[in-house]
Length: 366
Image (tube, rainbow, N blue to C red; front, side):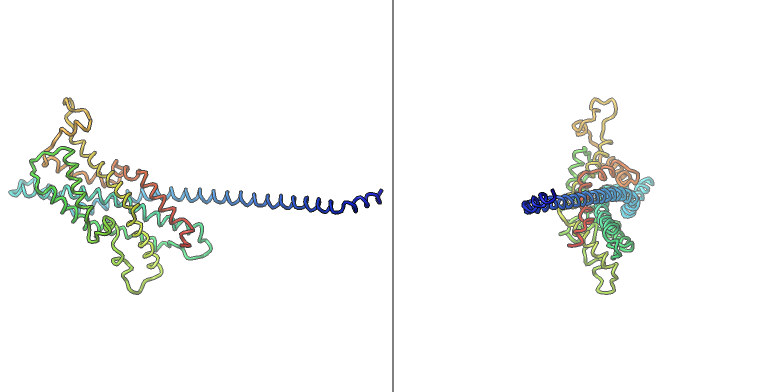
């Protein structure tokens, strides 16, 4: 029996060798495939967890953006009121001075200037902080997830503080220059209008459009950068102008500032800022429209755009309404004006793109 079995195996030795090799190969291939599937599953799970963590960090960062905007609005409002103090003029008018007409003319220019500046600067504050905090947010995400092996942080606390303090340009020199440019435009468009002249809401909208064109077609000491100059000075006016004595943190801050400046000068940023400005001036006119509505019970009291076009108010009555708009525009309590800006879909998408760019490890390789 054993002899016959041995003879059978010897006669079919090659077949058994092939069969053994095949079975062994299938087994090893199965093990390899199992290991690869496990690796893929582990990698997908890790990527899912990383993406979920990244999304959570991004959403948290956007809430921080919103809270930061709201917290800075009182400072912005006070800065505008400081430069354009209409309250002193209204107080003078109550004393019935001899130069009453001259004071009214000054009040006309200052009232329109400060409300228009409030719209511009609030829109700029919203989009600038979106850029800055998402650049910092992206780097902080990398610091917490990629560079845990003891390498130098991309955004250490001192750098964050130094970088974010650049917002003071918008509240300082940038705001001062913006006021100068807007005031000049307001003077040219409204300077010749009589206080007795009546204006409809549509005519007021046309006047605002004329002022906007003058402001936006050639603004600031650095016209090639357009409105972005008011948010961030040219490179030679920053830390980069220091020939020596720069610390490592200074160099990192300069890098962040240059990245921000490039972002502000990009076509995408210009598009987003224009969307915010359009929404902002539209909301400003909506606020004004409340005062152009006919009295209750009037035959034209239906709330339609056509009915509002038939209502006109003397410029002297429009001035106090315009003058008070800054408290609605720069309100730290979520007003319709600020909420409109914070909830614009294109702003959210732009913020996501900025965060995606600066939270990607690929950016480090570049």
